Image (cartoon, rainbow, N blue to C red; front, side, top):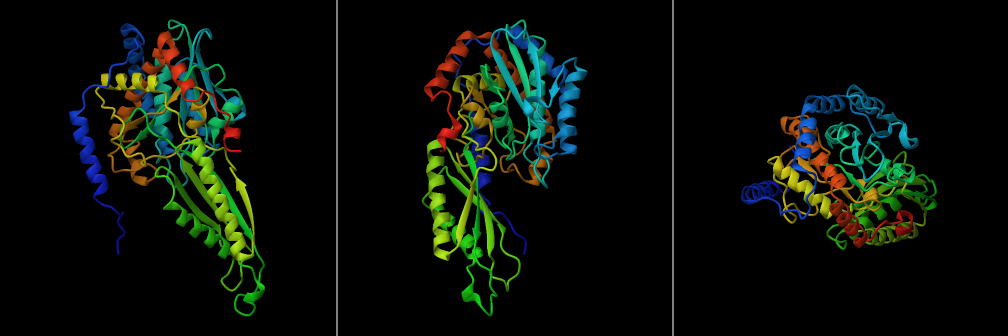
Length: 438
């Protein structure tokens, strides 16, 4: 029997709604900020378009040879080679990470904007998250601004960020000082829809291992303490928690060790869980509930539990900068793209990114750009195919223009920078990540 996804009509109805909204949508609300002058904006766009073929080639090249997090050696060299071909130096191995990259254009005086690239892939699925497009749009935005940064009185930085898929490269870069003195950060993510302020949620990892006592499962089961029973009890406890979680919370896990043979009572079993929430405070609350479940499973099965929290950095929810997102939406509209307003794409259609950790240090945006039909989810083979399709190639150029013009606005417009900083402080200012989850 062929398996088919559940709720077959849901995504079709959503696609129809999005099509109606897109057809009826007018231009985005006008921005109160002047941004970069029109003639300079024209020069930025022209510079990106001149590099368009190179950006698409970069995207396809990365897609053809995907590399996992912290092993993106070829990918980062490929990005550095593109910059070198354009006469721009790049440091590979920046911030103490072998596959991080740093490039800079401008005098170093005045405001500073960082454009972020990613290039890691998924195990078994390649670039099913479209990081090849993220790298191309970031490179294109940097190339569009590099020759004009001095005229704008500031500095543009390009950071290649390793290991977004669970490795937390941006958090490690932040701890190494990458974002000190930076006024704004811009990047985007390919998706099946186009929004300026996507509700990316936070995520942390907890690994739980249970220790029991081995026994013969048929002759002497009463002498054993079953660690697998503890894992199953914990898994079922998490399942029972789901109906009482916040609508924006997510918990999902896998059993990583279930024993050796059916006739041996397992003395060790283990599982790994992701906990996600839309706010640091609710992520902490969810973590406490999960801890209680794991400890209760040990008590119920007379085993011992060992919890390992956050073997990789916690990802915080993204704090979107509304002033910057508004400018980005304006620029994308100028390119003929419709950026959907909030409330159309369900909040649950989201994931997590380590850009959240940057966004609580520096004002940032992480919009999505459409490269696939709305019913095609990231992290599946179909999306990987779309990541080098015609729509993706167009997004490499137009996304780069949108990011470049938004970054140019920050460099050129003191009022925008002031409003961006004011909004950032009003949202809580710089947060201490370790303190949040302690």
